[in-house]
Image (tube, one colour):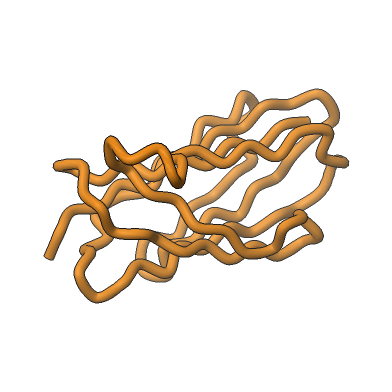
Amino acid sequence: GTITIIDDTIPDGPQNIGFVTAGGLIPANFVLDDDADATLSNIRVYGDVLPGTYTITENPPQSITFTNLVCTDPDNGTTVNLATRAASIDLDAGESITCTFTNSPS
């Protein structure tokens, strides 16, 4: 399967936003950045992922306010926890799941 994580900062800004994963994704930690600078992307794609449960948690810097998290899962097995800024992804064989973390500058 495939897991895609998107950082959508509104308006776009230079803040780097850290993410932590659990469940065996490699790399386990990554940074996204939603601005015109191509140094860091605002999208992270994990391809050829084995079926299982994976957690993605956003750790925004103090200059960013987390505003929403939406995941698109064909069988609706993925859940989100807005209080902890985390997605618990239930990935089935051949499934593609996309989670968009929305933020705004503080």
